[in-house]
Length: 587
Image 1 (tube, rainbow, N blue to C red):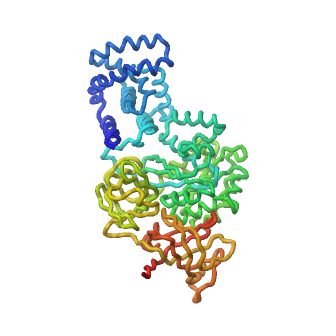
Image 2 (tube, rainbow, N blue to C red):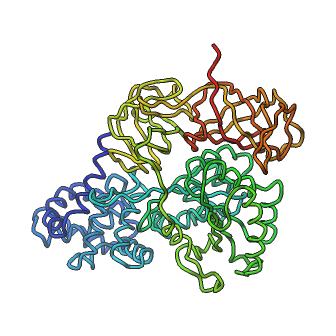
Image 3 (cartoon, rainbow, N blue to C red):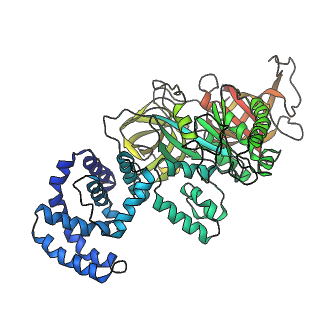
């Protein structure tokens, strides 16, 4: 626990300290390092370098051991640097130090072996040789290997707004690839790691998939090339901090996708422009329609439609194909409930080449808008109330020196050592530590993705779908509720006694429709006087539902994020709805 927490602190100090201060501390630092360096030097370098170099480094070593004068410490850094680069995770912090030195004008530019220079070159290529971006690159190097992924920002930096973006769309539209490409372009994955992925992907005859491996991390996802769980990653722009939620496109994993979409503020619908692929994704069985609809019910207000694979030979950045996809999509998205003028933004791109994600493209003169990342940065801020009651639906939980839960804070704010209540089983818990996107903080505001370490509850007692609340304002829980539902697709009629699976915020529970109360006219909103005996596709009704177990929910009017739901059955989304009122239990 402690070691993990203290590691980033020391980096922070090193980063914030002025160059002279760092230089002053160097001789002592290296004197300490030297002991470790000795056994490593021959080990790492022997296969790589020519023997003459080895002898040279052996000559340097004793000299530097005895004398802590600056010139000698310079030599040490030269011999140490290559070692560090091929080094283990434990030695990472010094690796960064040697790089920072290298950037300073008086640093040992002639130093370190070929390996070190190589990595410096990749850094320069990646970051456009600009000093600031170079520094970001260094943080990313560590990110690949070490536990705290993002080096903590200096404490006086203003907090960037957190935005959760979910990537949705049909299987193989390119969601994970675009996510991986964005992480590469914003410097969250370094070039070396990508080259490693590319090699591994080539061995499996999957060379076009290497970018998606940045998000599809487990073996099964990589072998099949299909995302299963919702991948998470983050990147920052000048104004905002984004969390990428990479949803699976396959229809068997739609429940996972619903969980991902329920945490998002913004959805990116990825469409493949390739001939045939767009059509299959959009036809009745395709996931394009279902995902767009689920995103809307999960409460995503703004939709960006990325028309991907524009560089494909069958498309070749043609405006006709782009417009054709657009024409088919707009009426459908309108029907789902997005306003084409305000809520939807179309843009062409290519995930594999990265065209139009960060920089505009020359092949595409007809598109005049901003590229994708710039467009995300320019979006207006989301309004969130930090003074409301605490509501944190739990997405996932695991054991790690205590009970750790993951979730997105929907409202209220949480701070360290705060007492909260876990609903529906009313356990009082205390927050031991807070991680927002893997960076430890003392307090969190709404919209952030959090990991909380809790005291006072066992991991077995928590289920996804439980909710953390403030003790003075508990969320409602119950089994029976009245809701307005819209039947979207169902072959036959639906009568009382019908069973389906309810997805509400992060909770998944079986429900039964116990009674149909009335039909609602779609155009006028009038309610029928008599109780209907059944409902069929495209009708809107108010029904009473009863869940198999106790669930946490709120009425849509009080708290929209926890009052909207979808009903699914046999792998299809049957209905969407909103909770109108909670019915108290009779007993």
